[in-house]
Image 1 (cartoon, helix red, strand yellow):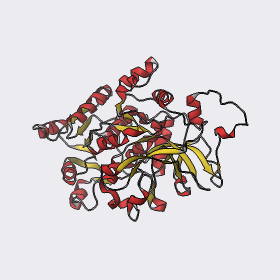
Image 2 (cartoon, rainbow, N blue to C red):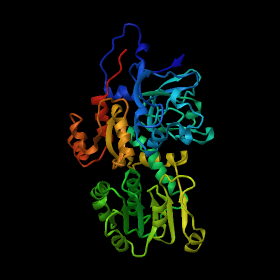
Image 3 (tube, rainbow, N blue to C red):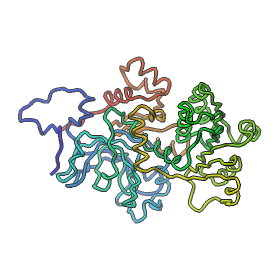
Image 4 (cartoon, rainbow, N blue to C red):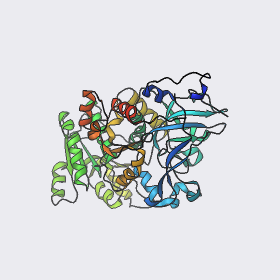
Length: 442
């Protein structure tokens, strides 16, 4: 037996079902839970093995909690699981063909039901994000534990230890995007930029994660933590991505005295322009290209006392390390492949206090049916910023934020103006859910 608040069946016999506010009912889970749920299931390697199916809604056991997925942003790590299938290291010993994988770890959830012996602090309507990498149990959400590309799911006691409470005033997408932002923040934990650094190079930085590093650096300049920062170089082999970076961040950088230089390594004059942009080299390099030779070449442009931040998903055993060069050039090399609970809590608090707008990383909005197409875009590196999926909305196609004003009826003028500028907001999210969410029926 499970305990649940707000179920229609809890009304006194004969009490009529009166119309209510859609947004309030959604937030407070004041509606009957559906008998079935839609979910993207992966049963092997390749996109052909990723299928959208309807299954009975998972019910919580005595110590479990059931949740609704409110939003889930897509990650390049998801596409690695699709490419590798059962051979992915995190799926060792897991029967993917039988038990399936449900991708998604950048998720924002709401508790909708709990088992009789579940921790009562997980109240119905309470919201959480999850630290997906469960080191204590050598497993992870979105891998051997079903993740966020499902409408309704269940977490056992193990996962509950890795749930982080979210204030209800924070938007669902804001909460989802805490996880990738926490990875960015974690990468600076050992060796951050400092107030004397003048040149930052984001090598392979035209994509969603590169933009997060760029946004962070501009914030540090604006607040005085990196007062000497004068040049940020973003290199990428995708001209469309570079144009998007320049369009979104060029004027912002100029306004605070930072020269933003966007260059394609394939251009004939690349070497000349790099020399002009940083004649003495870079003080801090973030490697976002997962190609060892590219990273090794980048390190040769690092100034003495500089830092190389290995952020890209480089394979184990690849690359050469010149220990003597590191020693005499007095370089610091740091690596990062994820975040810990503390990093997520730090970023969440920054978001709650208004210090950081994680929604600045939302570039495309989509419903659950479009998740596969979104993952294909991520795999093809055609997504310029993060894709946020709302599993409770089925039919919304991949829609750039700047086009969302045309998809949501009755928006206030100020909200429409922000959307037209590519800015996703809590107000737009609320209007989206209010207009497109279909309340389950008995």
